[in-house]
Image 1 (tube, rainbow, N blue to C red):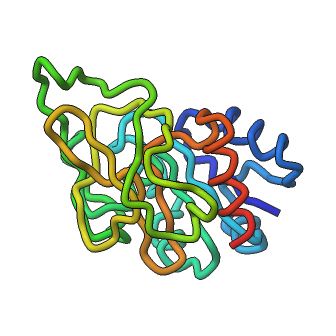
Image 2: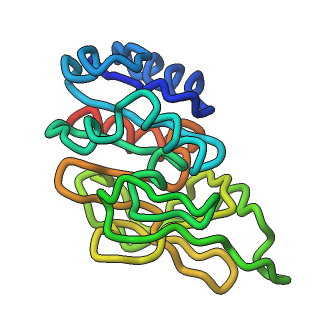
Length: 195
């Protein structure tokens, strides 16, 4: 059973639909007991990082999520709130990943938000089993996690190279949306389910 954490962040339906296509059972919940009983946990997210982490704290789930020892996958804002700090709303986040989240600078070659398909490289995790660098994923974001010791995949937008995916122990994160990234994204979700 997969627990999708309900903390008032967007994109919950598309994550649930992707899991259903893979034949995975899931529950949408903000109950610590249900999350604890699950085999794996997903923190989905579309929206403002400051509001997302505030909602997680209001539900008393911030410290609980940090204490989990099962595979946890943060998607987009769900990954960003697992970093140390986000410039979006000057948010102090969970501090699981050893990096900060910064805003893209607008330039001729880097429109903000970064939206659409983009190649990921430097794949370094079982999350990418069976995949090669250069596969394209779907991104929608104006803020990005810095490169750091937890980086397991990179992406370039304009002149900025950023962490497309992160891992620390049992915690994983993707800045892109695997649930919207076709067959390659489905493979990532399958690999997560197999961890």
